[in-house]
Image 1: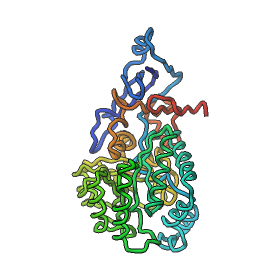
Image 2 (image 1 turned 135 degrees about the vertical axis):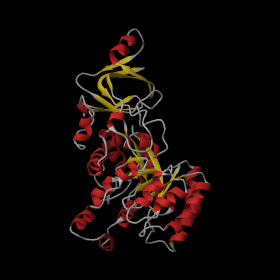
Image 3 (image 1 turned 90 degrees about the vertical axis):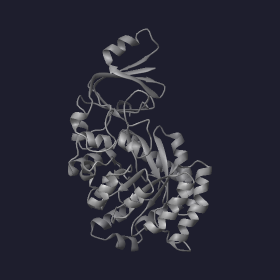
Image 4 (image 1 turned 120 degrees about the horizontal axis):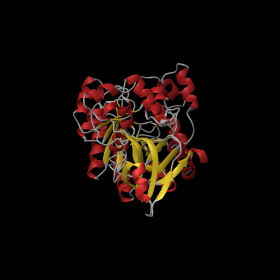
Length: 415
C-alpha cells in the first residue's frame, strides 16, 4: 500500500448529483488530507497526520509531499479525435481570413483532407501520433481519453485506425476509450449513396468490431453536411442489436441530432452549440449526458454550447476537448473548460464536475472521476493551497504530479 500527502486540500468530487447545477459551497474540501492506495484503487482518504501515525510499523510506502499541494481526481476527456494523419493549418488560416467551410472544402480542405492524409499514414505512424498527443494530455492531468476513428471511412481504413488506437492504449499510462465514428461524413470516393454506405458499415464493419473487441461504442455525425436522422436510424438500430452503446455528434450547426440521441437512449450527445430551448428541455429530461466541446467553438469562432441553460434545466453536463486537426487543434481540456466557465458563468464545481465524474458518466465509466474508497487512484496534483487557483489561471496552471492507477506517471520536477 501507498500513502500520499499531506495535501492542503483534497477535492474528492463525491456526494454530488450527476445532473443539474452545482454551487461551489456543495464541494467537499478535505484539509491536511492523505490518500491511502492499495494496488490501483483508493483504500481510504483521511487526516494525513493520523494516517501516517497508523502507517508506522505497517508495510506502507509513504510519499510525503513538501510544500503546498491540492489534489483533484484525474481528468476525463470524453470526446477526442487524436488518431489522425497530417495537419489542417491551411484550413485554420483560410477560415480566419474569412473563407467559409464550403469554400475551404472546395479548395481541398475540411474533413476529407484529413481522411486523405490519414489513409496515406501507416498504422505505425498513427500509433506514434496518438501516443504523442495522449502524453501531452497526461501532463495536463487527463488520465482517461476517449478516441474516435472516423478519418478512414472504409472498412479497411476504419479498422486501421481502431487497431492503432488499441495498440497505443497498450503502451500508454493513460486509458484510451475507443469509439467507432465510421459515420463521420459520406466519403467522396464511395460508389453509392449514403444509405448504401451506412448499410455496408453496419454489415461489414460492426460485426468485426464486436468479434475483435475493438470498441463498445458507435458514433455518428448527424448534420446537414453529414448524415440525416433518417439515414442514421437503421444504422443505430443495427448497432444496438449487436450490443453497442450509442453516442452522437448532435446539434452542432443545426438541430435534430439530440432527438435521435434521446430516442436511441444514447450515452451522450456531444456539441449542442445549435440546441434551442426545446432541445435543452428534452435533453435535461433524459438520461443522455450533454457534452460541451468549447475547443470547437474557439477553433471555429462560433457560439458555445448553452451549458448554463442545460444545467439550470437539470441536465448532466460534461466538458471535453474535441481535440482534432480541423476545428479543435488546441486540445487543452483544462484551458477550454475554464474558458467555457467564463462565458457560460459556470461555478468551479460545475466545471470540475464536467471534466471528472460527469465526463466519466459520458463514457459509462463508474470507477473514476471521484476520489473515494474503491475508485481508481487517478490523481491530478497541483502546487497550490487552494483549488480555486486551478481554473482561475485559465489552463495556464498545470499539474505538478499525475498518478494513474496508483502509480506516479508524471512528475514535473523530473521532466
